[in-house]
Length: 333
Image (cartoon, rainbow, N blue to C red; front, top):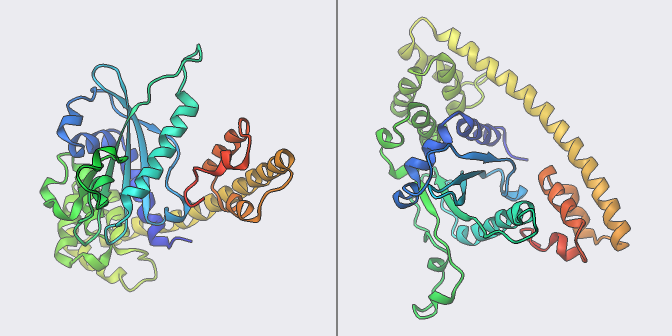
C-alpha cells in the first residue's frame, strides 16, 4: 500500500494536469519544438485510464492525451511522471511495454473504420517528467540502452522519449503559466527532505499570488500531514513571515484539506476495492466457464488488478482462444 504522502503526491499532479489549459501548456512547453510545430491549436483531450502497472503506481503517474497534427493526423501523447528519487536504468524497456499497451488498446477500440478496414496506427509520443534529486543519466532511447554495434542498431526496435528533468531547469523557467510553474516548483522542491526553508519561502511566495487556498495546498503537500504533527510549527513559522496575522486562517484551510483527503481517500479506496472485487469474481467465473480452469498465478493476478485492467481483460475474453491471448501482454506475465 503506498504511503499517505505518495497518495497525496499522485493526487496532486493529477489535479494539476486536470486544470483547464495546464496539460496543453505542459506539452507545448516541454515536448520537442519540432513536434510542437506540427500540433494543431486545439487543446489535448484526456484519455481516461492508466497504463502503469499496479505495482509501480506508487512511483509513477501517467496521463494519455489525444490530439492532432495541423494536417489532421491523430497523435497520442503519453506523459509519465517519475516520482523515484533516482533514474530508472530500465525505463526504456518499461516504456516499450507501456507503449505496446497504449497502441494495442487503440487498435482494439479505434483501429478500424466503419467498413472494417484497418486504420493506420497513430503517432505515439512519450514524455517523462522526472523530479528526483539525482541527475538523469539514462539513455533517452531504447537502442541507446543496448551495447549493440552501430551496424546492428538500424535493425533493433527503437524509440526516443522526451525527458523533462525538473532538477536541471531553473525555477523561473519551469513554465510561463503561473499555475503550472507553481505546480512544477512544488514537484521539484518537495518533499520536505529536499526543501530548505529558503526554497519553501520562495515557492510559497509564488503560490500566494494564486490565493490562500493554493498556498494551503502547497504547504500541505510539501510539509505533509500538519495536523497533530511537529512540522505544523514550521508551517506557522513560514506563514508568520508570508501572511502575518493570517496564520491560523491558512492553517485551518490545511486542516480542512487533511480531513477531507482522509475521508475521501478512505471512501474511494473502499468503493474501488469493492468494485474491483466484484469484477474480478465475474471475470474468474467466465474464465473457468470458457477454459475449464484458471492457474493459481493468474487467479492471484486477477484478484490484485484494478478495475481498468479487469475491464481490458474482460474485453479480450470475447475474442480470445487461449488464456495467453488475454494475459500475454500484461507486464510481468
